[in-house]
Image (cartoon, rainbow, N blue to C red; front, side):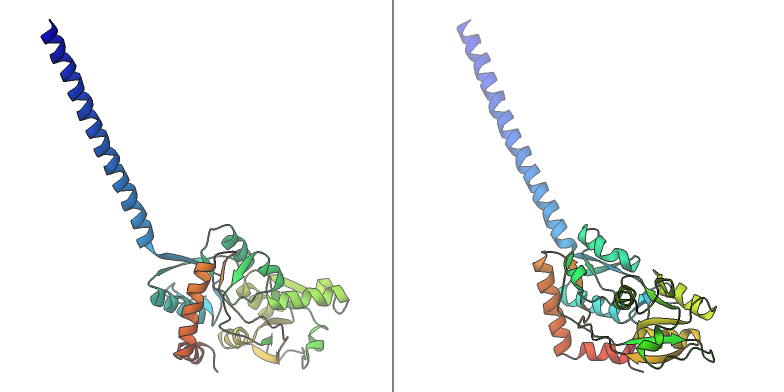
Length: 271
C-alpha cells in the first residue's frame, strides 16, 4: 500500500513538472510571438500623409487618377530617403489639421503654412517653399484689379483655411470689405467654375496655383501680390512628435542641399 502511494505521489510530481515545463514553453512561444508582432509593426514603415488634391501644381489628381504635383513628388522622395512607404489620403483642406491632431494621419503636406492657429494644434517642419499670391479673373470682363485694394471693390472667392481666407477675414473685421462680398470654398475647382460662370468676380489664390488654373481654365492672372505673411510652407506632424519632425527635417535639408527642391520647382512651378 505504501509502495502504491509512493508510485501515485511520484506520478503526480512528474505530471506537475511536465505541466510547468509545458507552461514555460507556451509562455516562451507567446513571448516570441509578441516580439515577432512588434518587429512586424516596426518593419511596416508606412507614413500616412494627408493632402487636399485640388491645388495644382502642388497637389492634384491626373487623368489616370494618380495624386501628382510638387508636394506629391516631394513627400515621395522624402519617403525614399527615409526608407518609408507613403500612403496618400485625400481630405478637405480645412480638416487636415484636425485629422493629424487626432492621429488619423501621420503628416500633412498641402501647401500649408504655420499660422499661429495651426501651430496651436500641430507642429511644422522647416519650410520647403514660400509663395506669393495672385488674383484670377475672366478674360475680357469688366473687372479691373490693378492693386490689392481694387480687389475689395468686387465679389471674390478664397479657399477656406488658406492665407487668403485669413487676409479676407481681417478685411471684413476692419470694414474694408463686406462679408457678403467674400465667398469661401472648400474646393478650389468649384470656385473656378463659379468664376467662369460669373457667380464671383475674382478668385484669390497662391500665385503658382493661379498660374496653373489660368492655363487649365482659360482665365487671366490680373494681379500678383505678396501678402508678406512670413508663413513659408512646411510639412505638418502631430504636436510633440519630435522624432518624425526631425526625420523629415533631415530629409528636407538633404533635398535642399542636393538641388532636388530646385528641380521640383523647375518641373512644377516655374513658368
